[in-house]
Length: 424
Image 1: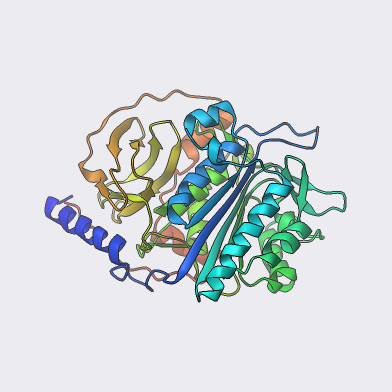
Image 2 (image 1 turned 90 degrees about the vertical axis):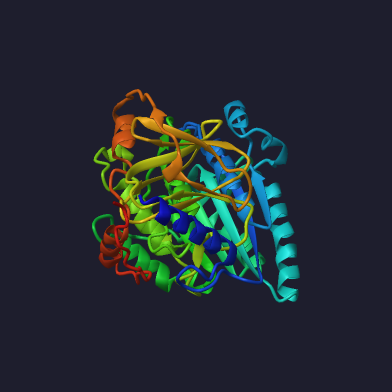
């Protein structure tokens, strides 16, 4: 990549982060408060299901991704010893994932949102759950807390209806997660399954809550997948990567629901091992189908990694404690920007190589094109591990994949600016 262009690109990125309007598209949201409530639980109340290993890791990673972006973040989780080592200091900020603590958190957020409303401010909530899901005694989908199940009725009666939020982004990584937001019904499996779900959602009780958007880990009654190499649920890792900025296909600094859905579809496109398949349901709020799940134009406490045109292939970022922060398969002709928490040592890794770097402060931009690379040995694992390692993120994500994806599902695409290949 030409050094003169890199300087111009980095200067432009600084302007984008600082001012917002330099990006194509509408300006960053003003007069809005952002909140995050992250609930994670490894335990299972069903003796036939083993406890999860990495739901607490996912909860910690979601919290650390969202906390620099919001006005207040709350974490309900019990972190095991390994997770506490990988996320030092976080256990002291967490509360147990019980019904009492969840409802207390909702009450606290409702109070803050009411203050926002009276002050003429909007409020946006990220409500994230990672853990086991199952049906309760009356057949509705539920998430698992330490002291019992929290069902679909609880979700709408005790959370959604009590929060005066402008938008609620509900992200659930759990088996049976579709049933957590939709009443049990007779939907047949098969090629039309997703279409049947979309039709059902559009005409049933979710229409009562036009402020609610959904990102669900599975549209079928199946187990969610964990991967020991990254100590995470596969779906949650992909969603966090998308929210870090990797899914921003048109370079406007915003990640919309269709971009996140296409990004996850691309990440899983090459996986042939049946046990590694991940399904997704992403449904934007009826109130605004173009609302952003992430927007790096907003002033936050994050820094940025800039991957310039010319860099191509599969890359991932790990921090000094081995937490994999984000991953993508980058097209050659378009830049990418990943938002990262400052004050840590990171490693940008590709197949067989790595480059260390640091994000010194909030708002700082690190140019990946100028990093020094060294060798990275990787060991092979079992069949599912091999499928994840070699096939996840094996398909490049960019405008061509995105256009094909949104056309296949009948969604309205975001506007994409054509970009020349500026590499030598």
